[in-house]
Length: 343
Image (cartoon, helix red, strand yellow):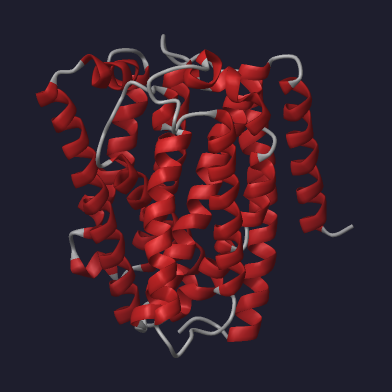
């Protein structure tokens, strides 16, 4: 058995263990699975969006990253299967699913929620297979696909995370979700490719991409918080208080430092943006922040008093992460051997 197959097998065993725990401790295990799926589905979604942008616009920046981006997008069917593990436990996760009749039941009801989730993941998986081919000459396909990603990604963020606190409403939550996913995917692709890219100009473009995306995310996150603070509504307090008024606030500060402050300082210098070590360091910081974001999007809504960890949290992230990593590395090497080494 190869190393990749052995790693994937360990991941399957870990996820199977969490699925077994779900039969006895539904909320704890389903929460862990939802967090893990948010993390890795977001990376696949972001890679898919970046591939479609490159198909539409072209540019030298995208060619060295395509093997890593295609490999990341190709993991979306894997995440779709993992999602089936927590969907049966909606009543343990979402207050509206347990309540049944409520003011938003026309949208937030279990059959419609499940149908939307399956539609989102199946369409993303189909598009992930579609972008494995060379960029198309006609641009109509990528345009329509990007429009669908904008709509479906926003709704997925609202469904999976914001509806954990159904009284909370934020117009920019969908855009905030998408920007974070795209930033994480770009960081993963750059981190996996930086050492093999010899062209300093292309490395500078990648650094500029990271800087632009992290500033976009920072702006959207700040405006979301500022709007909630100005509005001073109980609905917004229900979302933000567990994240800023408990021990979760330390995770919030760590996420801001890793996703905005440290990478921003490193990438301000144009010479640093050409340095592969700096790019790799920024990518590592942003991926760590991506994990923190997954934690903060899901866990505080269900563990409102502060960080209360369950061993299924580790198993879910480890299991899906090992599967994701083994598939990603196998496909990235295969794509690199087919397309040639990065420039």
